[in-house]
Length: 520
Image (cartoon, rainbow, N blue to C red; front, side, top):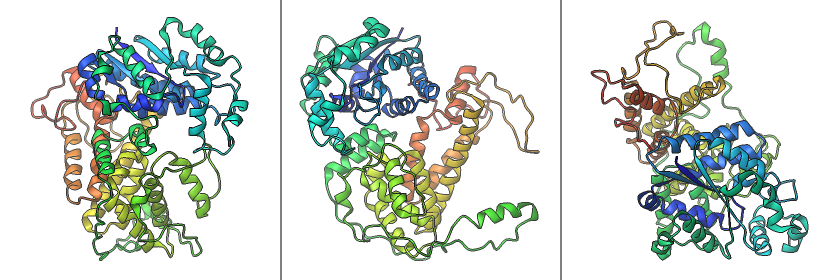
């Protein structure tokens, strides 16, 4: 039976140090111990769902991680996510830290049923932990100006013993308590649990030992759901420092904005849809311009992190002050360039007096700061960026890449959304190889499992299009890289082919990415 090692907190007690050391040494851990580092982004998504009382969805997300480990070739797995212990103390309404930790551990054990679970919780000296937590909270809230204010707020009269009394009953000897005296020591202690001889932590190069505080921008990169290629490029980008500004291409032959009325007569059966299309771009005569100057120094944003409310701020998107608050909530914890990109897109979805200004900012960001954006933007903002290249690209190639990627991503989102409504698992293996229902689109061809090159040709053509422009093409390429490691119709098709041995003549090499799916 495989073993999964799960570190689940607390916040501010070496959690970032452990996350970084796992992120930077994933290959070494796999090669030396046979342990696969499970995706931190998926774990954080599960934690967010559980913290929002969406228990079934959160456990389902943990179940996906468990399935990934069960079906991999790794001997075991490692998962690190402080959020799985509960909301951040001081930001959550409850005053007793991790009040529901026992329940969280039950959810984890149920999700990882069939695997041997080892759960790790860090217990540094209480006052040291509260000081560390307070330093983190200062970036999120002004509710606790001094450490003493936080100390009075938190109900920890019984110390860690009180926090862990019920969790010990639930987990028994599956719960291991680590008592670090520093964040660096926390990471080393955790590694020594994975390799009790201490050889692993002793052999790690000194530079892999993380500092007391991982820079926030590096935290954002480590947590992101981006590709490994994008994360590596972003780290190299930040290490290289400022580069000479690159001149933008001349903004010539830009598309009309708002879009022109259709020149093709609209069939009567599509009149209602045409009316909706005509409402896509709204005119706002009076709207504040909250964008920075066109020649803003974008390099100054690289170490700045978006600060936003933990709860949805409300307000109306038509009001740009409200929109800034909403976007800051959505992008909190990410580099400031992501917020500026979202603000530029907000203007470029409307008809205002600031279109040219927003275009300049948008195109400068993607010419100069693309590495950081690709490594940290959530997928939905990659799609929004592609739509903006469709509407405001500087060249026909940019507009073609944007439109192709936008429609592909949205149709995939719609299809996967329908499966979720039907209750179908994203990583399910098909029961059979033949279509069993009639087509709902008269004349639309169906296919046998393993008897089509539709998926392969679609992705190959998208990648070919991405190669036609180095700016917009990077966005579509990153989306494809994320798609390759996601559970979608493409991975299901490939894994089901392997499971059923669906190897039909003429289509034997027609895997979605022109290679058999990885088993990890």
